[in-house]
Length: 341
Image (cartoon, rainbow, N blue to C red; front, side, top):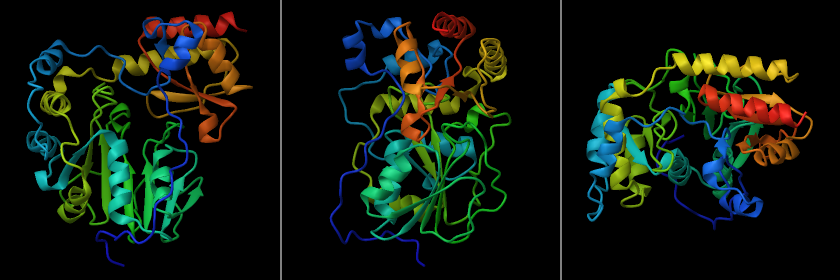
């Protein structure tokens, strides 16, 4: 089975609806809430303040000119940071765009795609819009062959890591490491000798807290990256995102370590347990909490200025997902929980 770009042979159909974390501004208007009044625990990003140096870089970008369509300086910084060549890197408008580019480049109707369940909804949505046959799995990675396998590691929304000692040798393997920087040791599969069928995604919107700029990276061997470059739209990464991403990659010392975040998570989990809740184990900065009715609990907490992730869209109507914030914000969330008991 070749691993080249697959031609389009049939019409596409609309992607299924997806739900993501973050503020719904129309909902806030209906509730009479200002975004400034809401603490957002529904997004899995770094809660630390942006370094002043990074703010100055962003403020200094000339937005009157088109950005570099190939993000050359950003790719060079990413290549240096991860020990690969620039030809092994492509930048995208968030990891979500890269997921869709991967599906566009390599999938055609009838292809088999393996996706762990529950997980980030864009994998299945991108595959289905290309009329691929999606098969879900729960537990160890199946040995069944597939044209493409998506692995979120650590997984969203569960927060657990999958041991990837042996990857499938057939078909494309896409490993999304969006949250790997929140895991002890910051594990990665990125390297100069990556298997030819492996593509690894990294998100600078998570640990570098650049969600509003939309910035992701894909790593692989140069033929795979070149295939993605052929289907990439021009100017897909804006100038501000390129400059901020390059700076973040070249100055990792300005980003906070994980020590305080891990301690804040332990304190938050302990506080929830004191209230009778039972947060589930996790390997990173977010975790699931079993509840009676996730949608109703989300609504009641939002009315008190705290937004959590209702996991109904993951197929988990009895789970909410909480991302750790600074200790004072976490205390406000605990107070909101206590007020509705």
